[in-house]
Image (cartoon, rainbow, N blue to C red; front, side, top):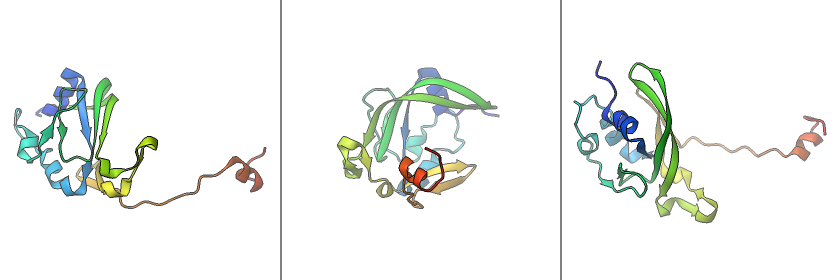
Length: 149
Protein backbone atom coordinates (compact mmCIF):
# COMPACT_ATOMS: atom_id res chain seq x y z
CA UNK A 1 0.00 0.00 0.00
CA UNK A 2 1.38 3.35 -1.05
CA UNK A 3 -0.24 5.68 1.48
CA UNK A 4 -1.78 9.08 0.97
CA UNK A 5 -1.50 10.82 -2.39
CA UNK A 6 0.68 13.94 -2.46
CA UNK A 7 -2.38 16.22 -2.39
CA UNK A 8 -3.66 14.71 0.85
CA UNK A 9 -0.20 14.86 2.42
CA UNK A 10 0.16 18.51 1.40
CA UNK A 11 -3.20 19.40 2.95
CA UNK A 12 -2.38 17.61 6.19
CA UNK A 13 1.09 19.19 6.36
CA UNK A 14 0.23 22.78 5.36
CA UNK A 15 -3.40 23.12 6.42
CA UNK A 16 -4.28 24.81 3.11
CA UNK A 17 -6.02 23.60 -0.03
CA UNK A 18 -8.08 24.66 -3.03
CA UNK A 19 -11.24 22.91 -4.22
CA UNK A 20 -11.67 23.37 -7.98
CA UNK A 21 -15.05 22.46 -9.44
CA UNK A 22 -14.91 20.42 -12.65
CA UNK A 23 -16.95 21.17 -15.78
CA UNK A 24 -17.51 18.17 -18.04
CA UNK A 25 -15.08 19.57 -20.63
CA UNK A 26 -12.25 18.98 -18.09
CA UNK A 27 -13.36 15.58 -16.78
CA UNK A 28 -10.80 13.51 -18.71
CA UNK A 29 -7.94 15.71 -17.51
CA UNK A 30 -9.30 15.69 -13.96
CA UNK A 31 -9.38 11.90 -14.08
CA UNK A 32 -5.70 11.84 -15.08
CA UNK A 33 -4.87 13.53 -11.77
CA UNK A 34 -6.20 10.47 -9.93
CA UNK A 35 -3.62 8.10 -11.47
CA UNK A 36 -1.47 6.18 -9.03
CA UNK A 37 1.61 8.09 -10.18
CA UNK A 38 4.84 7.79 -8.18
CA UNK A 39 5.27 10.23 -5.31
CA UNK A 40 6.52 13.60 -6.53
CA UNK A 41 4.88 13.46 -9.97
CA UNK A 42 3.00 16.69 -10.64
CA UNK A 43 -0.46 15.42 -11.56
CA UNK A 44 -1.62 18.83 -12.79
CA UNK A 45 1.26 18.94 -15.28
CA UNK A 46 0.54 15.32 -16.27
CA UNK A 47 -3.05 16.34 -17.06
CA UNK A 48 -2.03 19.54 -18.88
CA UNK A 49 -3.83 21.77 -16.38
CA UNK A 50 -2.47 25.29 -15.98
CA UNK A 51 -2.54 26.99 -12.59
CA UNK A 52 -2.97 30.55 -11.37
CA UNK A 53 -2.02 31.96 -7.96
CA UNK A 54 -4.53 31.88 -5.14
CA UNK A 55 -5.19 35.03 -3.10
CA UNK A 56 -5.39 33.59 0.45
CA UNK A 57 -3.55 30.24 0.40
CA UNK A 58 -0.29 28.95 -1.07
CA UNK A 59 -1.69 26.16 -3.30
CA UNK A 60 -2.63 27.48 -6.75
CA UNK A 61 -6.01 27.32 -8.43
CA UNK A 62 -6.67 25.49 -11.69
CA UNK A 63 -6.92 28.21 -14.34
CA UNK A 64 -9.73 26.56 -16.35
CA UNK A 65 -11.93 25.74 -13.36
CA UNK A 66 -14.99 28.02 -13.40
CA UNK A 67 -15.30 27.90 -9.59
CA UNK A 68 -12.55 27.55 -6.99
CA UNK A 69 -12.68 27.61 -3.21
CA UNK A 70 -9.56 28.58 -1.25
CA UNK A 71 -9.67 26.77 2.08
CA UNK A 72 -7.95 26.45 5.44
CA UNK A 73 -8.17 23.04 7.09
CA UNK A 74 -10.15 22.96 10.35
CA UNK A 75 -10.03 19.27 11.15
CA UNK A 76 -9.66 15.86 9.58
CA UNK A 77 -11.43 12.58 10.13
CA UNK A 78 -9.80 9.24 9.35
CA UNK A 79 -12.29 7.18 7.34
CA UNK A 80 -10.16 4.14 6.52
CA UNK A 81 -6.64 2.97 5.77
CA UNK A 82 -4.88 5.87 4.03
CA UNK A 83 -8.20 7.71 3.80
CA UNK A 84 -9.19 10.90 5.53
CA UNK A 85 -11.81 13.58 5.10
CA UNK A 86 -10.59 17.13 5.60
CA UNK A 87 -13.07 19.72 6.79
CA UNK A 88 -12.09 23.23 5.80
CA UNK A 89 -13.16 26.84 6.16
CA UNK A 90 -13.65 28.64 2.85
CA UNK A 91 -11.49 31.77 2.77
CA UNK A 92 -12.27 32.89 -0.78
CA UNK A 93 -14.58 31.89 -3.63
CA UNK A 94 -13.64 32.56 -7.25
CA UNK A 95 -16.39 32.32 -9.88
CA UNK A 96 -15.99 33.28 -13.52
CA UNK A 97 -18.06 36.39 -14.17
CA UNK A 98 -19.93 34.78 -17.07
CA UNK A 99 -21.63 32.41 -14.60
CA UNK A 100 -22.90 35.16 -12.29
CA UNK A 101 -26.56 35.97 -12.82
CA UNK A 102 -26.74 38.41 -9.92
CA UNK A 103 -23.46 39.02 -8.08
CA UNK A 104 -25.03 41.00 -5.23
CA UNK A 105 -27.39 38.12 -4.40
CA UNK A 106 -24.83 35.40 -5.27
CA UNK A 107 -27.09 33.87 -7.91
CA UNK A 108 -25.11 31.51 -10.13
CA UNK A 109 -26.06 30.07 -13.53
CA UNK A 110 -25.54 26.55 -12.23
CA UNK A 111 -26.68 24.69 -15.38
CA UNK A 112 -24.20 26.68 -17.47
CA UNK A 113 -21.33 25.45 -15.26
CA UNK A 114 -21.96 21.91 -16.63
CA UNK A 115 -20.33 20.37 -13.55
CA UNK A 116 -19.49 16.77 -12.84
CA UNK A 117 -18.80 15.17 -9.48
CA UNK A 118 -17.32 11.89 -8.36
CA UNK A 119 -19.92 9.65 -6.82
CA UNK A 120 -18.05 6.53 -5.67
CA UNK A 121 -15.35 4.37 -7.18
CA UNK A 122 -15.09 5.40 -10.82
CA UNK A 123 -18.68 6.63 -11.14
CA UNK A 124 -19.41 10.29 -11.86
CA UNK A 125 -22.56 12.39 -11.82
CA UNK A 126 -23.57 15.18 -14.19
CA UNK A 127 -25.40 18.23 -12.86
CA UNK A 128 -27.82 18.47 -15.80
CA UNK A 129 -30.67 16.49 -14.27
CA UNK A 130 -32.48 19.17 -12.31
CA UNK A 131 -36.06 19.73 -11.23
CA UNK A 132 -37.98 22.35 -9.27
CA UNK A 133 -40.23 22.09 -6.26
CA UNK A 134 -42.34 24.98 -5.05
CA UNK A 135 -41.41 25.90 -1.50
CA UNK A 136 -44.28 25.36 0.89
CA UNK A 137 -45.60 28.17 3.03
CA UNK A 138 -46.83 27.69 6.58
CA UNK A 139 -50.18 29.24 5.63
CA UNK A 140 -50.49 26.80 2.73
CA UNK A 141 -49.67 23.81 4.94
CA UNK A 142 -52.30 24.93 7.46
CA UNK A 143 -54.87 25.49 4.69
CA UNK A 144 -54.20 21.96 3.34
CA UNK A 145 -54.65 20.52 6.84
CA UNK A 146 -51.10 19.10 6.85
CA UNK A 147 -50.21 20.94 10.10
CA UNK A 148 -52.15 22.50 12.92
CA UNK A 149 -51.74 26.24 13.52
